[in-house]
Length: 87
Image (cartoon, rainbow, N blue to C red; front, side, top):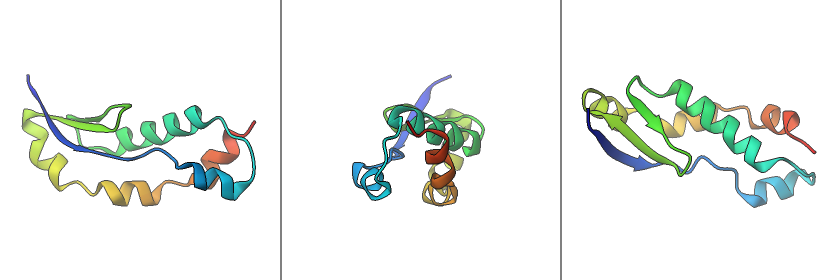
């Protein structure tokens, strides 16, 4: 089965967000948790890679293109994730 590149999803937390909290976080663990959530919500046959590249199997291309990626990111509870990954 082939995979088609759909888009690149910027799911990582920016440094200015961490600065607003004024604490030290395990940024890699934070981004890993966000990626895990995004992949759990993604349509079947669609994967978001660590570099943000969204790829879809042949039968999932339409679902990947129409999926509300921004909506998934907005629903993520960043406060909880940060609380779990503070140093």
